[in-house]
Length: 590
Figure 1 (cartoon, rainbow, N blue to C red):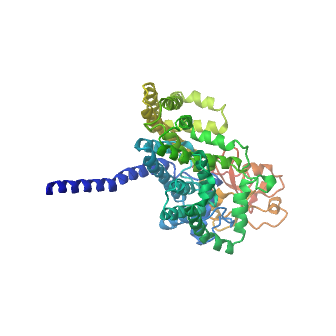
Figure 2: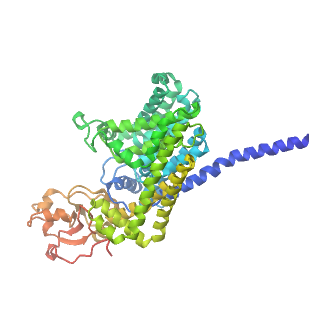
């Protein structure tokens, strides 16, 4: 008898060990792989205002420690709440006050990798292990997610907090939430509000309403649940801990963050909106389709597979509700940006993966999924063969690329250059894409849909890796002003410098201080000059009349040519006797 109890105790210890170590051996490798994969190109230089304005806010925080009301390098109030900037500044402080491309992007990278792990865990709990790993791979292989995962912007951190909070809200939507869970969810949504504003509550509440409607329940019944109000109260308390003192100190924040950034972006210009990023109503859907190809082909299989067993079906509809609300909200919004769809992509990955890996899917749904796998695999195989042909016939392809759109021609040139300098790495990417898609086609033919979907996911990872690890970093290196600005900063020293036209956040970030716009009277030369150095694009200088200040100044430094903008010039207004024909060594071309 004693031996039996001993064996039972051993079994209990083994079971306890498996429960304790199982998630570790699943989550840790998944997190590490996501960090490595999504972190490709994380040190690439900034090359526009999209990332340099947030990075400049972080730099200003580190330099001036104004943690309550962050400002950019030009002294303008932040248009977003401060949580992302606080986290990035904390990383910079831990690195000795260094704010570089890696430091400005690492918070977003960690948030993106954590989002992938949340997808893995939630899908595993409701759809099973195969669906968990397929959802994880699909998310990493979604171009729209991977290409913007490590951006120095608030969107990725916001996506992680909102998605995690929404997944944790599921028990409340089905009537099983505890008070402690409500407090946790409220905390997550409160931090999400501190990242990008009250949009977090709008998305989650709207998605739950759609889920209840899809499951034929009255969406208004959730308003009678006390735990919902606990969640809202906790979220608002956490958010108000910053909003109230910040608004008291800087009342203009109310105008900037609520009126302009939220209502101003949602409303059209004729109703008081800012008119910023106004695009056609279908723009969000077009961007979503382009950012999720070819994986969005599986959405047809998802619609055909809604007859799953109850537990899986409800979670599938729950994630589908979030996808619908996110795309729908930003469709009716006046402002439409590419990064707005990022929030919907974790749910999208689960929605398309769950039916493919579920054993209860009927024959019709399985055939639809196989067709989607076949089309996706054929598209990826075609892409791989096109890459192989381009590498084999580089000269003719380079000549043909001149007939393409300038940006497309640049990417072709970058690809051919990388294939010449890094043939092993480019060849490996092409090989994985080709082999994975070819095996997927063979598996579709043999009716092994689940394995075919995994092969499509692997091929898609390789194709996306080519983009985020090779082409995007090279594009950034060719379009950045980093080298030019750092050289100009050395020349200028402590002297004042201005820029012709509107302020350029990329220039200001690499200068380490705000570079103000040049007043009009200094351009015309009618007023005394109070600055010896001016930055201007060559095309701006060429437009000035011969008797104006900029056209008579000397060129001290010139950047490499940048498509559609020419060269950025550093002009010396006090030494015009040297003339504009002085020999100049272009920055970034040494």
